[in-house]
Image 1: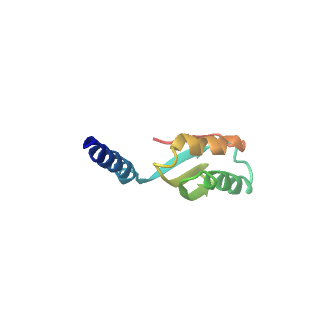
Image 2: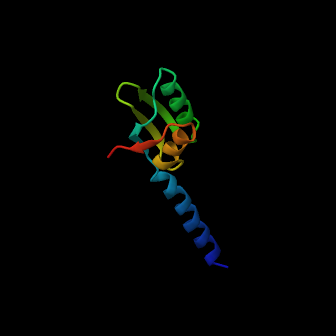
Image 3: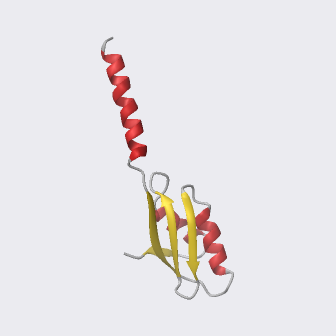
Length: 94
C-alpha cells in the first residue's frame, strides 16, 4: 500500500516530462505538382488542417513550403502525407 503514492508520483512525473520535451519545430518541404496560382492555397490549407501545425508558408516560385508545428502532436511525415492526399506530394528538404 505504501508503494501506491510512489507509483502515482512516478507516473505523474512521466506524464509531465513528455510534454516538457515537446517542442515547436520548423521544417521545409519540397512540393511537387504545383502548376497554378491555386495550388499553394490548397497545399497550405491541407497542411494547416493537421493537428499541431501552427504556421504554413508556401512558395509557388520555389515549389517549397515551410511548416511550424508541435512535434508532440504531429510529424513531418504526417504533414507531407496531408499534402500528398490532395495531389501534391511533399518531401522534407534536409
